[in-house]
Image 1 (cartoon, rainbow, N blue to C red):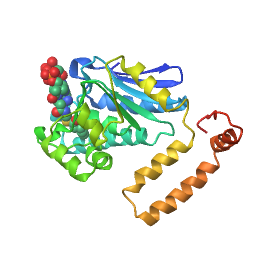
Image 2 (image 1 turned 90 degrees about the vertical axis):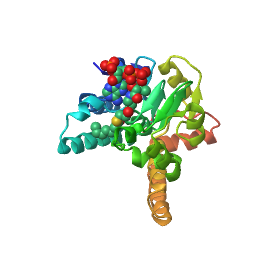
Image 3 (image 1 turned 90 degrees about the horizontal axis):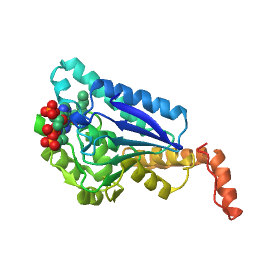
Image 4 (image 1 turned 180 degrees about the horizontal axis):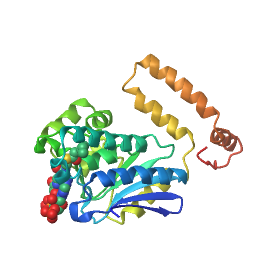
Length: 256
Ligand code: CO8
C-alpha cells in the first residue's frame, strides 16, 4: 500500500510509501489518507504523525503524470478532494505532526501545512513550485501559507517557486523545529514527548480560535474566543488541570 497506518504506543503514524515517485500523491493516496485519518481518529490517539518513506522525500507533491490526464472538471474535483482531506486533518481534536525528511513540495508541503506542527530533519527543503509547471497550489497552499508566514513572503515563495532550506523555513515560521538526522518516527515522538504527555481537549479550541484570528474582525474573534473559552471550561480536562494545579501535581489529561 502506498499509504500506511501504524501505531507506536498511543501515537498513530501515517507513512506515505511511494518512494520510487518521491511519495507523490495520486488520487488513490488522497482517498486513502482521508480514510486512514478517520480510522486513526476513531482510536483517539495522543497525536497523528505523518512521515514519508525512503529518506529522500516527505512528499514531492501531487502526481504530475496523473494531473496531465485530467479534464477541467476532474481537476476541480481532484483539488477539492485534497482540500477536504487536508481540512479534515486540520480540524482533528488531537494534534498532528509532519516530520519532514527530504523535500516537501507542492501538495506535500500543503499536507504538512494542514498539520498542527511541522519539524524538519536537517537537509530538508520546502517549496510550492507549481508556478514552474504553469500552475498554482491546489490543496490549500495559497490559503495556509500566508496564514503561516504572512502574505508578502507567501506570494514571493509561490511566485518564484523557489525552495527554502531548513534555516530559512525555521526563520519564516514554516517549521516549528529543525532536528538532526535520525529515524523520522523516533524524532517525531521525541518532539511530541517534549510538548507533554497528552494535550488537553482545549488544544482544538485554541487551534480554532487562532485560525480565525487572521480572517475575522477583532470583535468577532473575541466573541469566538469567549465561546471557546466557555466550551473549554466544560471539558473533563479543564477540571483535571485546575485541580492538579491546586493539588501541586501534574495533570493527567485524557483529551476529553
Ligand atoms: N509527480 C509524479 N512523479 C514525480 C513527482 C511528482 N510530483 N516528483 C517526482 N516524481 C518522480 C519522477 O518523475 C521520477 O520518476 P522516474 O524515476 O520514473 O523518472 C522519480 O519520482 C524520481 O524523481 P527525480 O528523478 O526527479 O529525482 P531528483 O532527486 O532528481 O529530484 C525532486 C527530486 C526535486 C523532488 C523532483 O522530482 C521534482 O522537482 N519533482 C516535482 C516537484 C513538483 O513540481 N511538485 C509540485 C507538483 S504539483 C502539486 O503538488 C499541486 C498540488 C495541488 C493539486 C491539486 C489537484 C490534484
